[in-house]
Figure 1 (tube, rainbow, N blue to C red):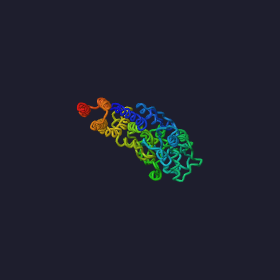
Figure 2 (figure 1 turned 135 degrees about the horizontal axis):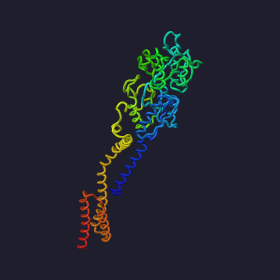
Figure 3 (figure 1 turned 135 degrees about the vertical axis):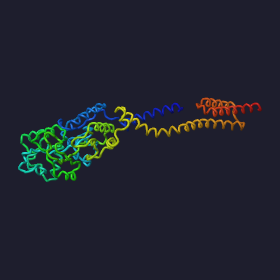
Figure 4 (figure 1 turned 60 degrees about the vertical axis):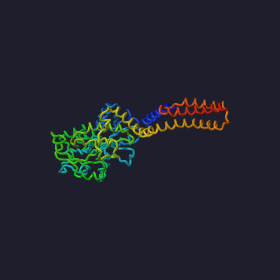
Length: 430
C-alpha cells in the first residue's frame, strides 16, 4: 500500500470511528420527552406546562402527561416500557431500595401539608387544634389513594397510632374536599400542595377556614425522610384576611423531579437551566435562589444536575444555542480521546515511513550484493545477470521516495552502474 492510500485509509477509518462513537458512545439527546405531572388543576401540571414552553423554545417537544400524582408517577417512570423521561413526585414517596434505577434531579418547590379546618367545628375543644389526634375524631378528608397527600398522611397517622380505616376518615380529591368543608359536610381536610396553587388561594381568602399549626412538627422529620419544618409568619399568606392569624409550624415535603439513571446529560443541563429561571425567586416558603435544590430528595442526586446547580451551565451551553452546544460538546467528547490516541501515532508516522523506505532499499541492495558476489566468482551467465540488473534498475527508478531520500536513490543507481562496469571490464579483459 503506497503512502497516499495509507493516509486515505487512515482518514476514512478515523471518520468512521468518530461517526460510530457519536452514535453509540455519545448519542444525541431525544427530540421529544414526556413529563408525568399530576391533575390538570394542580401545581405539578402547571409547572410541567411551563417546562414544556421552555423546552420547546430549545427545539425539544414535550408531552405533559396528567396523572393521579406521585405514586402513579413513580410506577410510570420506573417502567422503561412506558417511556416517561421526567416525573414530579413528592419527596419521601419512594426510595432507592424500591426504585434502584431512579435518580433525583432537583427539588423545585416546597409542597406543604396543609391541615385546613373550619373554626366552628373545633369550638368545643376550647383552643385551636394543634395535633393530628385533635382532628382524627372529626370528619376529615385525607386524599385519594395513590396521591402524595394520602401517602404522607398515612405515614404520619401510623406514627400517631391513628387508623385511616374508620368511617370518619374520607378519601376525597382536593376540590371535593373543599366543597364539602365549606358546606359543613366535613370538618377538616389535609392537602399537600404549594401555596401558589389556586385551591390554596381560595382557602386563604376564606375567613371561616383556618390552617392548623403542628405542635409536634419537629418530631416527624426524625422519623420520615424528605420532610422540612417551615415557620409561616402571621398574615403572610393573605394580609387582608389576616391569614394565618398567628405564626404556624407546618410540615413540607419537597416537590422534586426524578428520572431514570440513563437520562441524557444535555436534558438534565437544560432542565436545571430552565429551573433556575422559573424557580429562583423568593416566596412565602423559600428564600431567593433556594430552588432548584439538591437537598431533602428521595433518591441519589444525578451527577450532572449537581454540577450545573453548583457551577452553572457549561461554557458551551452558556454562550451557544442549545443544539449547537450539544453537537460541539459531543464532538469534543469524541475528539479529545481520539486525539490522545492519534497524536502518538502521528509522531511515530515519519519513523514508520522512513523504515518502509529503508526496507525497500535494503531488499534491492540484498539482490545487488548477491550479483556482485556472483561477478567476483567469474562463473555467471552474462545475459541472465544483465536481465537481473535491468530489473533492479527498473524497480529502483519506480521507487516513490521523498526528496529527502534522493541521495540514497542516486547512490543505489550508482552501485547498479558499478556492477555493469565490472561486467564490461571482465568482457574486455576476457
